[in-house]
Every structure is written in C-alpha cells, then in structure tokens.
Amino acid sequence: MATLELYELEGCPYCAKVITKLDELGLEYESHMVPRSHSERTEVEAVSGQTGVPVLVDEDHGVEGMPESDDIVEYLEETYGS
Image (cartoon, rainbow, N blue to C red; front, side, top):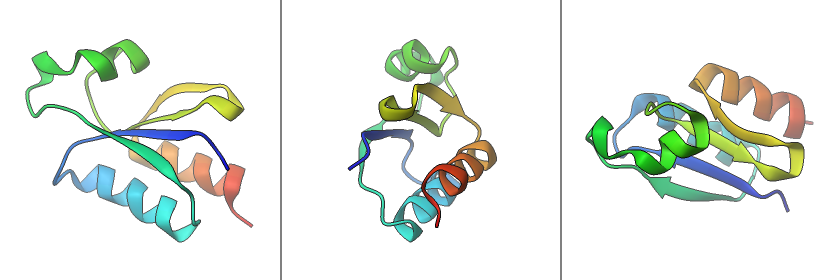
C-alpha cells in the first residue's frame, strides 16, 4: 500500500476535497493535523516550505510536500486512479 501522508486542518474545505478523493480511490493515508495558527505550523513548513494546508507527501513516488488541493486531487487521480 502507498505511503501517503496528509497535513490537514479540521474544518478546512480544501483538505476535505483531498480526503474525499483519497476515500474515493480507497487509499490509506496517515493524517497529520496542523495547529490553527500559521506561526505554529513548523512541521508542515519543514515538509513543504509553506504553512498552508493541505499538503501531501507520497514517499513512494518522490513527492515530498505537494501543496494546493486541486494539484493534489489531480495527482491522486493520475497516479492512483483506474
């Protein structure tokens, strides 16, 4: 199974869009909830260089920190879709 990690924020509509796609494709992933305050989001910033979420990590495919929900959804479809 893929080693997917998702940095997300509870109640974030962009994160929800990515989670919906992950669920549609039946993909397992590890969730990392980030703090609401951007200044406390050091973990996601270290991964992606920015504090926004969602951010996807897919070590199996060399993705170290992909931002932007639309880009993530498109990537998931291209990589894992049938």
